[in-house]
Length: 108
Image 1 (cartoon, rainbow, N blue to C red):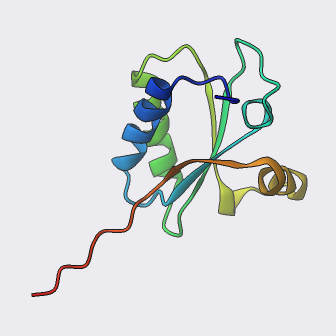
Image 2 (cartoon, rainbow, N blue to C red; image 1 turned 30 degrees about the horizontal axis):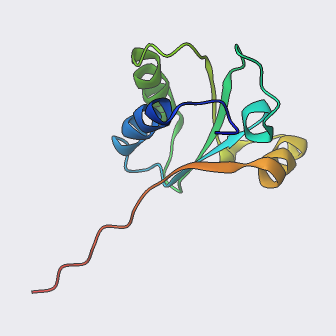
């Protein structure tokens, strides 16, 4: 638990992300990913998915807020990060917090 989030907190965050099929993966970065967070540190999370749009990001933010967790979230869409330095930080220290499981193919 290097990131300082309980298993319950991670499961609740993952539960929100499952409501949004466009989210393929969520990467934790920043102080929580590095393990040098403080008790009040926010959760830096960038989302991956080819069809993700800003409106979905806003809806995800609202659902995460409804969890009433003692953290603030800094959400972004990886493909829309404009700052090259931030993209390098995510690439270097990003930790997968959520990954959508592929649906099984049923043949019949």
